[in-house]
Length: 598
Image 1 (cartoon, helix red, strand yellow):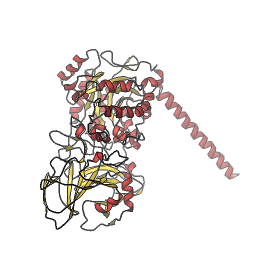
Image 2: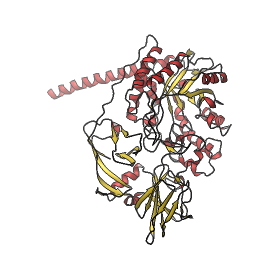
Image 3: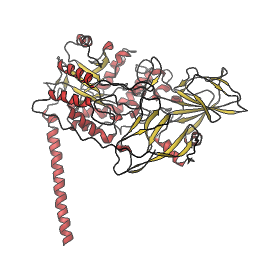
Image 4: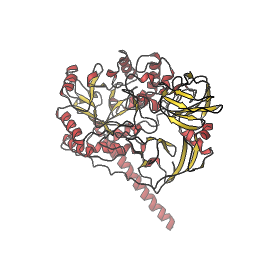
């Protein structure tokens, strides 16, 4: 009887809890979603006058950019809550084609942003589905398998590109259509491509993209975004800038005098490049410009509000005046730091934007910050040479001449997108090794499994005694993400390598794309205890112990030169001693409670 009474008490308690939860959900749905339910949702965002209107009511876009693919999924809610608490009313985000279609026949939308979450936070959404997005991503977000076509002309009406865009949009756009404002969702506008005014190789291309969106059901306001010097064409034109120049605004107003003026990308900071200085924009300068934009009655989007991290091999590169690769951190000196911390920019911005709220509204409280932990050092205790890992790669492949990364017969013949490629051939004499401009982007030259030098265009190879193996480990440091060099972003060896002016021939080629499946397979490899003089290049394994519930932390590599860090098989990104980036952000959700493999 006592047991039965206790169980009945528990039942009543659980029933009460369930009733409370149900009541809370109904409150959230009927309360928070009331904004959307009260609106008729027939007209949407309009730009027919000097000010935006949303369903006929005056509306100013105060937006902020967060890229869902640069933020751990477990932190999406946290970052959007911090955005809402700062006074932002609109989220803008890109859709990276290369992450959602890594192979021609493979579509992956598991990492798709939950736009219902944005609606729950009462945030509107401006979506930027590309297909080209720039965003400082490898190849501007375009998939590398497009480059298997030797005649490919990206961002044009080249038949191969058009066909690929249509295939991707056939999968993507139907997922977005129900999320539009007029369908009851949060999407109030869609951007057509990105910065095409500075590219403009094909006059009919933008019309094709516009029709590709509308024919599949996109019915919300369309807009384009360009730097002020290239405002040539588009639907509703918006501008990108960091310094507010009266002339720039006048040019935009002259092009479309009867439309709202919007700074689609106000750059709150900048990205960093390996070997250069860290970029910062003083908080006072940022807030001063935003204040002036708002004073003029303009709409604005902060790029970035929160930058996050370009995990793995996502980072892009610049081509001019010379090739320069980007770091994996996308902190951007934004109001919300790479790890989601508040900055002085955030506090100044929140104070400014609080003045633009309705008098009856107040900003939500700022969410409590996640705890950060300084864990004990991870000790590397095992070593695996590159040569002992080759049997776990896909291949090898034989070729008379070098084959670039994208044209290797791997990944269901979609080629290799990222990582390293090893080229091996037999030589019988030494001499001058010349690469010209055919190494993309860096190569470690290895003479008979002994590393001798790297990344120079000319190297003297010592005289071998008999037949020796000459190896070139080529690293793809990231494809250019903008400009007119996109079509030339093939990686690996893209032409002949000369030894004493004679082209090397008869290569054995290994693809080292560092995918999770490859890393998992390495657990079966013949690892050895770490000696005082391990061979390079190689793999090093250690353990990190996290007590209790794992917290955010950072990985620092004092004394290490160049490589990649994996935690529990997840690629955090590249490290390189030349800086400016000195640590890699390691989010708590990437860690296990207890032992973690490094």
